[in-house]
Length: 461
Image (cartoon, rainbow, N blue to C red; front, side, top):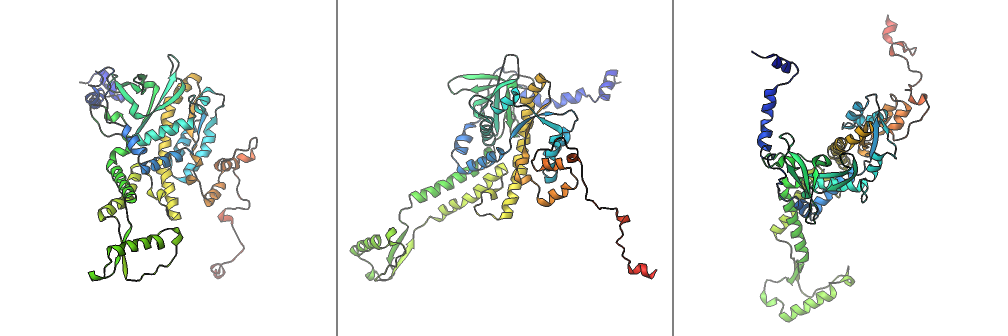
């Protein structure tokens, strides 16, 4: 017979047996880790993704740079949330890929959020996170690490017994290793930062912000707690791209003679003698080679033929593999390959840009923004007792803007101020008329509409 406590737990939705069952996986995965205090486990070398991928492969560099440069268009602003609970609507519109819904984001953001004064300590931190970098410089490096290594880290300097950031710094994933020893549900107690001078600095877990790509490799060493680099899945295509470029370069540097001139005679008696070959070579150098012989017509006293010397079929196949590896490398990050096409059609480029923003840029900015609001904003909210919100302004992207017909349709159902916000202008203050919705004059209900015309059916009645 069930006890009174079991009935209460069931009524409240608590199920201790289920909770214990659900934690068994964590117990298996992390049980051995939390028993090793301050033990660091080293995984494969993430530094290779930077040195052999981003720094040594032009294709990887171009793809990551394309993403990071596009992300930099959206500025980061600090707002204070108003108390009328309109922020939920603003957040849902921002995440939508529909142009009209995303356009509403500007309107609802204006209604839900207020700009924070620039003299605020939080605002100053966002403008200058540390003495060596601006926010744009810091976040650019952070994003390079994220897209190349699959994860990126920020850490904050704080006062004693405080989690309010005094400065923020970025570090690559290959210099960060987790320290295990917490609980089964939260096994990481800190991170060890390699200072590259023989010293290791230990950071509390709460002072470290980790943004990572999902890693499905679950094991007892905690691999799932680290991000998975796209290059880990695309190593073979990276190698193919490197091999093809190397073959192409070798063929250019070491190609030697471009062709061979020989008599066009089957009879060996009519072939050139060694002295005649030397004489012909001198004539070629004098009358064919060089810029001074450009567009000249050269005469020959005997039938000769020219045989081009090119790459072997195997070498040509490797070079031809460049275009396939380029496409696959783009697919690793979800970047449309059309963006790197030197001769795309207008429609293809337009669609590729929209896909790029909707499928790569917006999802990442939402992910980064949510993480920063949890890690960086919360301590300031508690200290100042204000509902701070960090927000990336995604309305700057042309790919998300409405066309003329869509704006014209919205102008009939929105107020003047709402349309001004939609177009990126400031609201007209102290004007009630600017906040009213206007309709075209002369409109009447259809059942009251009469043009004074008589139809044939009416005449027959």
